[in-house]
Length: 305
Ligand code: CP
Image 1 (cartoon, rainbow, N blue to C red):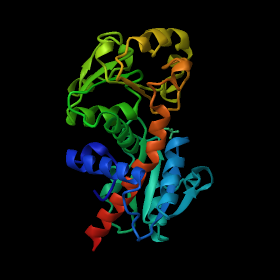
Image 2: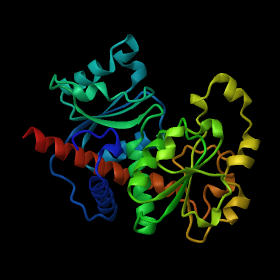
Image 3: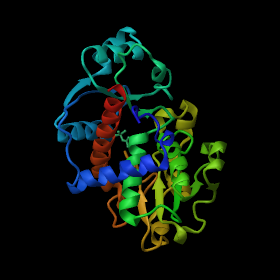
Image 4: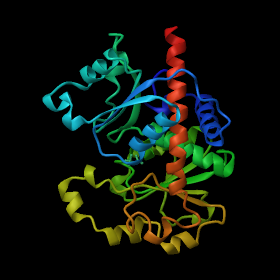
């Protein structure tokens, strides 16, 4: 693992090692590596959690960080992403954390042979992957239940635009989870059939261990679809209402990657409810990202030496 672009390209063993490493950082039992690195954080799409928790992870590791603001960088003058990242490599940046609206932005860069490209860490690509979110989600589930096999996880909502859903569906299935999907038919990508079963949201609610609610991604909807969207109807049909919450099993938990559209995909009063792990997910994100940063830079160092 000398790039971190798609969690689903790692083996189950590598994913489990990252989860264990993240938990060890959280518990204070993992050693902070002596070797310090420099990371550049480039967010071409808005972010609160991912950006600030990568920054916090870098601070906790004692690393140096450069924040490149896309709106005032030379990408605004037309410089390609490839040239921007090689420039950062040339000035001594070890790794770049990049969020970009383009799905698979990293794919052509993985084949770069200039020797200038820093380690690539994907902080979210369009409707593609969100591997660091997926890792923190797995960490949160593993802390809660201690295993993945035989869990039943339902992923609900705007599946077609969600990189969180796409990242999580495959790895959860590979780890032995029974995955089901619910939400509007027009937001269901047929290729998700390979990872789980599409069901009605209300089916077997008492058998669910994790309700993973997804944000409605207004920024990725067409203008017409966004104009037609009705928050109250959506909440009634596909949201986690108080009535649905009351049907969940005692051990069940609620997750959401956030930001949350309160009252749309989840009732406002449930965001901080006893079953909600939404803020725990955010706290775990720092430790998951410490595990990613250290693992990927150590692996690269081992390869290049
Ligand atoms: N969950 C998530 O990616 O949040 P941000 O967009 O705030 O980073």
